[in-house]
Length: 209
Image 1 (cartoon, helix red, strand yellow):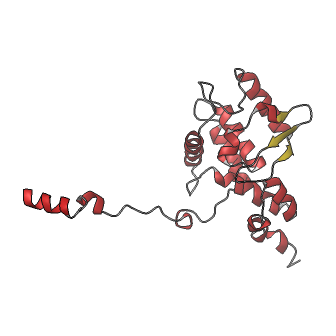
Image 2 (image 1 turned 90 degrees about the vertical axis):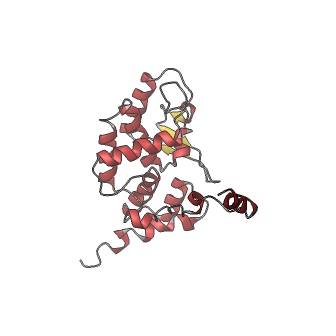
Image 3 (image 1 turned 45 degrees about the horizontal axis):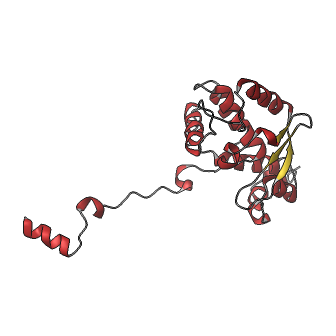
């Protein structure tokens, strides 16, 4: 036995457990048929998040904000109150990945949700915070949305980035032009925006009428 171990050390043979192949992460296409949510699915996700957990209003508002403004998780958890202008009904969006910042309008339901969240919070620069007052982490948001998706009985697993895609597809389905969607989502290159308009049924509307 000692000779075998010595041989392994000399030849730098890894243990058996290292030799076993690590299971590969399945492709997104193998897990779900699409990488975005429909408007009805977003509403269901919000409703579910607003009925489970200890921070129902915060979680529901987070999902609404991510969808309406096409936010990545890191962009959402970095939002601060000084980016919100309640008088003007607007919010300034800072984009990651060298994306273009923009100022978006806030709809009435968003304004009401954010005002309530502001009242319920202790004074904190961040909009979406933990019980201890720090900003939410990516892991917390991922788990919350995955759980809400599971509780919603969706036929596929849900992840936060599907809300950003949901925003893009919703705007494309409304017939919003590609350049406007590009600016709204902060894409530097329009090639990242074309995916939404290419799969939109809007351009085929009326073909059979």
